[in-house]
Length: 331
Ligand SMILES: Cc1cc2nc3c(=O)[nH]c(=O)nc-3n(C[C@H](O)[C@H](O)[C@H](O)COP(=O)(O)O)c2cc1C
Image (cartoon, rainbow, N blue to C red; front, top):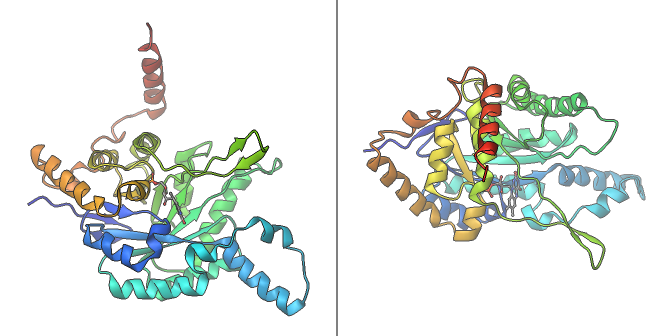
């Protein structure tokens, strides 16, 4: 009998398949189906800083009558309550889901800066979530902000959430740091138990007929996985925080690659939009079949087997591979 179990954020999971945050997770029936088809844990759709801040601004505006100082922010923001039901309902949803599910439930807070909204982390903990994923989705566009200031912003936010809560905390970030390894260490030192790599930043397109910027969100392909594999393979064994991969997990082969790089879990969203939630079951079956054929006894046995833990100088290693791959293209 193959042992598919893995541990993530101090939770023992029956296998490494975790559902990533997305609107699919807004429906209790979907959560039940995910569990039934084999998901080992679920990350709920996010509650956004803007929602929480707006709620207190709206309250404040009602109290102080006619304050328009945040009018611009309000215009930019879509009505998120259709996406995730709003803060109070989010907490209720956690409670309901916890009563219904046997697998761990990881809530998600999505923001960029410290503020009173962080108090919701504590409420999420009190509502019964098993852990919290803090998604710091931030694109720095202020030209006076240095990299150091941007990084400090991340760290202050993580510390603030950490100091308000006791349950396990993972942090989901993008790949755009000058020194990812150093940043990973800082995130860990700020109190994160896990690192979720990487956010997929949506990339707007131009409509050249109407001269409009078109926000769009393409579902990922397996190719997105490579960036994650590289960084998990480099970070493995160098930080204690658990590593999770999100982005580009589309098959059992992708899950195997994620494990071999050193991830504790493989998270997925796009593939479930594309192929439906029941696809989890066939991924799991294919995973077991592959492991049997290759005589693996457990997931833990393969975790980190393709990492760079024995590469003494990752920078030289990366540079050598870069040169090799370019020169292999000679015609
Ligand atoms: C429609 C959609 C909505 C998403 N909403 C959230 C969200 O609320 N919070 C979050 O942290 N990530 C969100 N994500 C990102 C996913 O959780 C995931 O990290 C990303 O899509 C990469 O994984 P994938 O390649 O398996 O799709 C969303 C993704 C999609 C496609």
